Length: 86
View 1 (tube, rainbow, N blue to C red):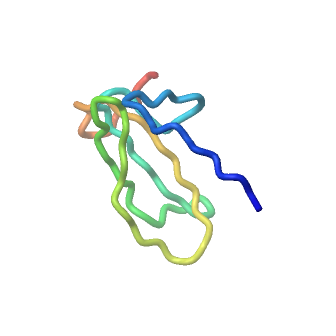
View 2: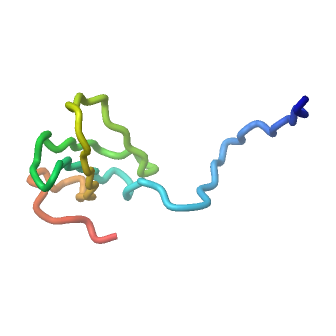
């Protein structure tokens, strides 16, 4: 039988030890979707919080294989004209 191990509770600070999908504080993440080079779904844009965390709502896709590309834009760039230089 396996042995139970007690884990320490998470504290108020979560340290990130690797790559994340965070963006700069209050910037916008725009996720574009394609399948075989053709865009089948409208891009989804969402503003990050003060810590750079962002989350989109659920979205429906048909059967198939899709690619998602996230691009970061400055918060004031409502036309999505210039990518944020990070």
